[in-house]
Image (cartoon, one colour):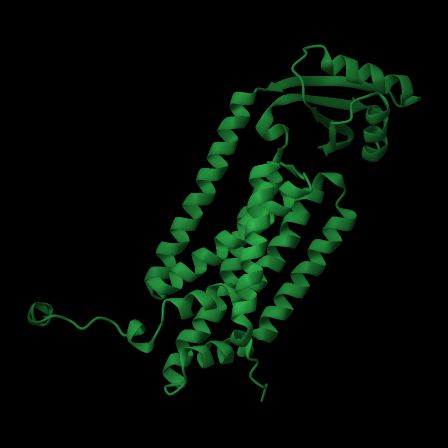
Amino acid sequence: MLRTINFMGVRNIAFGVTVLLTVLALFSWFHKGLNYGLDFTGGTLIELTYEKPADVTLVRDELVKAGYHEAVVQSFGATTDLLVRMPGEDPQLGHQVAEALQKVGGDNPASVKRVEFVGPQVGEELRDQGGLGMLMALVGIMIYLAFRFQWKFGVGAIVSLIHDVIVTVGILAYFQITFDLTVLAAVLAIIGYSLNDTIVVFDRVRENFRVLRKASLIENINISTTQTLLRTMATSISTLLAIAALMIFGGDNLWGFSLALFIGVLAGTYSSIYIANVVLIWLNLNSEDLIPPAATDKEVDDRP
């Protein structure tokens, strides 16, 4: 039998670490601000086509040499098509980029297929909708947990998820990682991952209230967390390995996405143990909270 680990024995130290990380993340977020990508700030989108398959890394290096340091280059459809995104609303920008690439293109010149502009108003709308979507996801999660478990579990899960989002976004702000729609998608994915990890622990805590009738809440949480530890480690390590492969081989376009996921998985694993569970202790969860409310005399009389 696996020896019970006293996770909650260091909960005060973990609380101090949590507060420190959260404060630093919020400071970075509000002091430095997010480095919004073109999806949010607006800019020019240029689709290029080549006669032969194009090397994304080579094209990106060529644009940097030509003075376009903020250009984002990615494959688009066929191997001969590339998508270039950069700030600026000059109608001639697409042709200027094509000319710069043609000078160094050698036997594989580039030609402009289309040029589009994404105005800052559109980017602002995307940013607002993304934030609203994240807020609605958190509210929906709390309602779901309140119905499935009990409202105290819902509060614990929401506090845990908010911590994960703040820490992830704060680290991205500190290192000024480009925050675009792919990174926003990663943040939303973090919410789902962290919630799944938290629910596994919560489910075991609820079951152990019926099995460990004489155990205190802290003993219950320690036993429940220990019982789910192998599952948590297996899931987290396998997920981190997959994300690490994406960080190494995914290229620059997926770097922000994979980095956000990597940070979020680490934060989610930590918060499911030392934040969600600690909130249950603060709220003094007990077995009576999990007993369904007794039916009133009127409800009994109304039964067929």
